[in-house]
Amino acid sequence: MKFLKFLIFIFALITFFISLYLTKLSYSTSISCSIFDGCNNVLTSKYSKIFNIPISIFGTIYSAFLIILFYFENKKFLIPLTFIGALIASFLLYLQIFVIKSICFYCTIVDLIFVIIFILILIYFKNQVRVNN
Image (cartoon, rainbow, N blue to C red; front, side, top):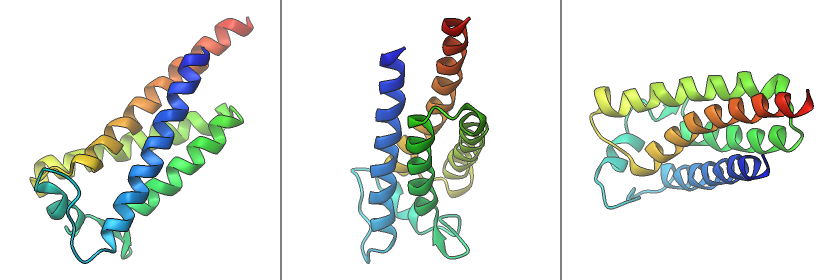
């Protein structure tokens, strides 16, 4: 149980720092974030911003909320929040693959981790209920 809690925390930290890095790149004049060419296409596409705000800023804020809520083990908000995050991440993966037709390595890592965090949160709280009964 402690390992699972540690893993979720580490994943949330990873997404926080990668999202922060992607935000920095979004405001940079030259975007080059990996050995793959897709980052530039994804981070400059019309899907990379909402109301002219880079999606990565939302990812950074979302990750910070995850860390705080998980620290306090707030099941009431964590499960719905991570579910919504997993849905949005899945949609962003869909956009990269099928609409933009480019893959941003870091964006993909963040999106996959958000889906994994949702699964791990479900497992964590399911195991917590078993332990308490």
